[in-house]
Amino acid sequence: MTDLPDRLSIDPASKYYDETLIERGVGIRFNGAEKINVEEYCVSEGWVTVQAGKALDRKGKPLTMKLKGKVEPYLRDDA
Picture 1 (tube, rainbow, N blue to C red):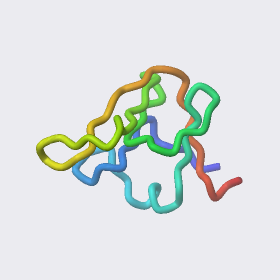
Picture 2: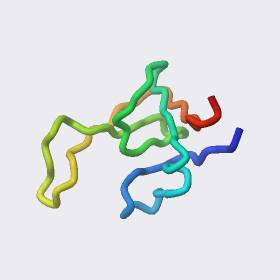
Picture 3: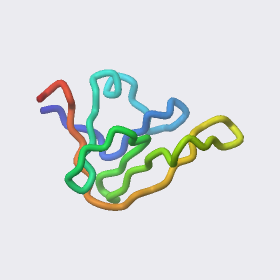
């Protein structure tokens, strides 16, 4: 299995964005449950950001909220 980064974002403007990993498909288990709406995660700090409904900020990006817990990233194509 390939080592995944400690922190990854799907926002191209972020410094934690990695297009090649996102194209391969990164899955997230958060507190033992599969999450499909994760915008960004950090394993060492134990948090994920997820979309908060359909609301958008003034720049047109979805509003997010930070959830704290156990984060387990994995590559979907390794299954």
